[in-house]
Length: 301
Image (cartoon, rainbow, N blue to C red; front, side, top):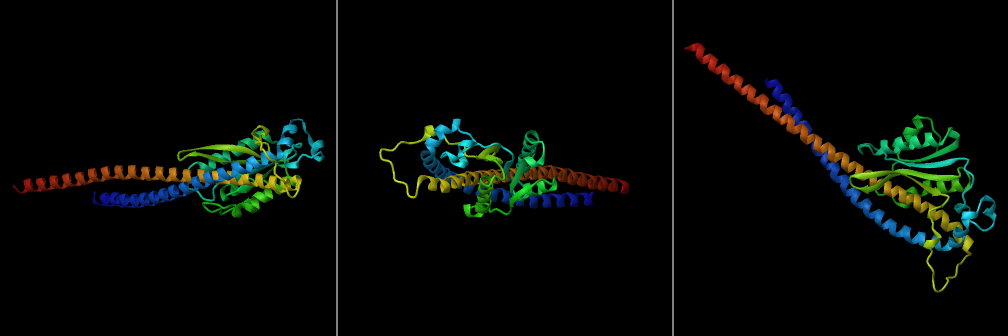
């Protein structure tokens, strides 16, 4: 019985250490989540302003694009606004680099795979761009075509960190490597909930001419409006992709915090059960010792 008591004590001690680790990781993830939520809020303010500017500059094109086709591309419409025949589709899949985030990665990968299988008959019909080592390793193991991958993003990624991959994505679209681009990621709702999203980034189709603001005085553009749009529209598309990355990182930190909280709670439950087992075993040992003493004393009478 003594060996059993020592074994239970060791298990309680090791579980307490694990609980302390998961509790610390939960607090770290909570701090990261707070920062990410603030960064996401600030980005939304920037994105709203850029969207307003872009909408104003292309309002006339947007009003006519319902009837436009590829043949209209040389009639003043910007190529990033026109839906061209889809020969190949690009997907940016955002996952984490590490584990310990619950079902965060499995949710993204499972639903992305299901979407690809439903929408494509062969691997020649799509191209993958991966952000995060988990997704890259997953698709490489299945021998999928990965055009570009990015690993090791910081917990609060700056635009400079992702500039290469978002610029590469927009350039691949402009060079017709693919004809439309989607971003697949988990959207952050709150600390307990995230939602898988697939958002179309290119061609730019989320602008509404009805949102165009009218100004009493028209401003002067220098250089020409066309030259500005050649710079502004790719930057707008890049900002949309960057916003999705920030959103995905926020959801990742929330998933990490929730996973570590669950692990901590489970460890506490195990400690509670082990403590009960220890007390019962100890009580049993004491009862057995008393019984042996009483039996010994009776034998001496």
